[in-house]
View: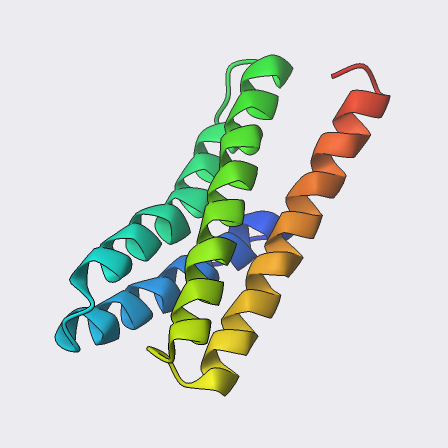
Amino acid sequence: MKSNNVIQEKSYQFALDIIKIAQLLKKDTHFEISTQLLKAGTSIGANVEEAIGGQSRRDFFAKLAISYKESRESHYWLRLIRDSGFLELTRANEMILRCEEIMKIIGSIQKTMKEKGL
């Protein structure tokens, strides 16, 4: 995927890694957690894509707000998975940091839009 849109690229790559982690967790019979993580982690990028294709600035902002909420949820599930010992510590911490980066980028976009009057 080629893109000059940082959040689009990062959320897509994040989703790919979330899929791999969910598959790993599912194999280890942590099905419920893997499903929750998969839904939230892949929804970030899906909503970024919807935001980019939004019909108005308000539509863009609304979809981006959903992406932010999904990134918060993903952050929760990743921390829970890490602290439960279901995923190797280094890998879990790496994903948590990437998720935090995505949250910061989305939050910054939202802040800028609010400052400019949405």
